[in-house]
Length: 278
DNA sequence: GACCAGGTGCCAG
DNA sequence: CTGGCACATGGT
Image (cartoon, rainbow, N blue to C red; front, side):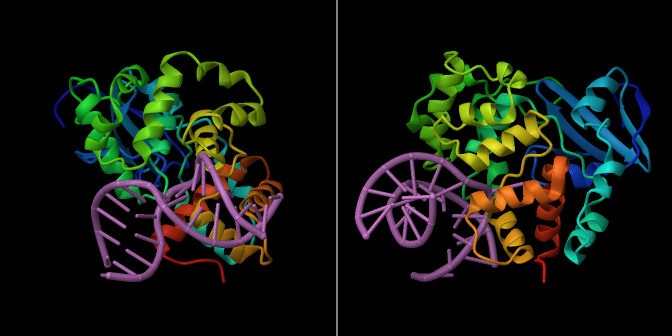
């Protein structure tokens, strides 16, 4: 590709394509032999060749942090359960890493996610970016709109991005963030349960969305967001009638401190293979 | 045209 | 605390 000089970095136990297609982010663009991912306001063009990752010179540390190249994948693999479905998930999803996402973008995106397929979440993200996001030179997509910008819109305006009943929640939460009623940065230093409690006070944020934000933006790798897929998987794995909350607790206890990672592999494997545990 | 999608909030029992 | 339902939109 023409453009800035590329440098190679070591990236063992990393699968770029699987990672960006695993339902964590919704705006990665295929580009050249790799992907362009707008990380906050920095377009990150990454290509993978085996255990090497090629990124533009100067963006190595951004790439290391965003792709979480410091996570101990070998230890995480070792924590996987030994049932056939979990082994198959590991075999087929090896190399997926939990990204470190910008906090507001992650929160806002998952507020738009309830009862939507991943392709629809992608469409809403692109719509919001195109209408309200800052243009970034060299980027295929606009930045995710700031909370302040979305706080200025009206619900009717937001509906043009086809958000449906999510528009009201997104606008209200944008207002809470923009006004300082909640400080997303300060959640970083709080225990997970306290951070979750604060997030759940926001309109449109329940336990599942809060857990996605904790896992994908706050590096709480033991957090398990239980959506319809994970619910079906866990019900099959641990037969017996349990509430969603109980399923979350069971998996947290059984999977351990990387439960969120294991959850992500089970989720992605179930989706791509269209199978559930026997 | 029913049915479902990375849920949440609210209400009845 | 638990189960049931509405909520917008788009794709099989």
